[in-house]
Length: 144
Image (tube, rainbow, N blue to C red):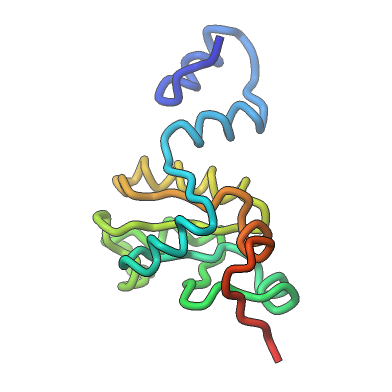
């Protein structure tokens, strides 16, 4: 029996077990929108923001999505929070569509679910991450 996303911690306690990474991922994906790479490109063209969570090394070696905003995963909450002194004005809007991208679409799901807890109802991620984007033949900027 699957646990409801909102009550995952309570479910874990009731079942007397520790949550696994898969439990957290499953719960996260119940509360966010997952975009195919093509849908993410369309959402970006319609004014949504792609946020690239990957490290600089990955962006330099594999490329980057044109127009994506690079924000390290560890600081995303502070960059999007309108009340944070460290906010990024381009993405610090709870009404904005924020589509997170990591390498393969795992950490972006967890981060997007955390943004929904912060009031970002339009937070989502790219299924398959950057690598699915690139494999789909969508635009990629390369260094050099």
